Amino acid sequence: MDYKMLCHLDLTECTSKSRAECSSRNNCNAIFVHHSLIKVVEMLIQRGVGVIDTDLRCTTAHSLRIIINLAGAVPKCLFDDLPNGWELISSKTCRLYCCVTNPDDGNNYIIYNSMIKNLEDWLMTKDADGFKSVLMLSGYSTGQ
Image (cartoon, rainbow, N blue to C red; front, side):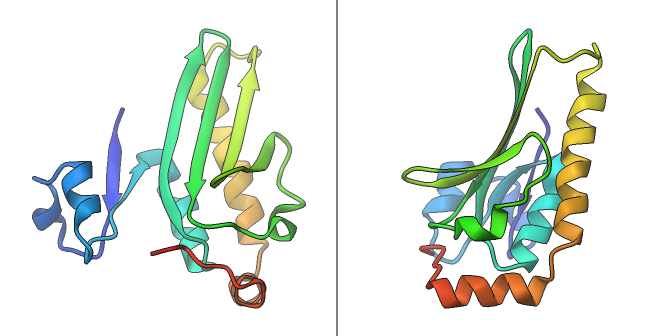
């Protein structure tokens, strides 16, 4: 799979580092993101939500899965009206999760793009300052 790093360091400084090396550095906040989820992750960060990493894969021949692992305990109220197929799962960590079971179309690429586009469109309707305000009032912390 093709993953990219979103990092405050210059990209040439990061390319030789493994995930473990990069995450162990206090001054490096690399986020490993599947290339098709970069826009979604950037929009979440712009709205004050910390993102740890992403996972996009076929879990079986009949199941497609997208996971965006979020940092900290994100207030559920911000994600009450997620697009169809998406949900916020909270346990020890929070994650945005989408799973398509038995897709009708044999082209996984089209299905993934459709689900990601739905989340992008939903995020576009969310005011960044309003999101940040709710996060601040809830005492949200990314733990970083």
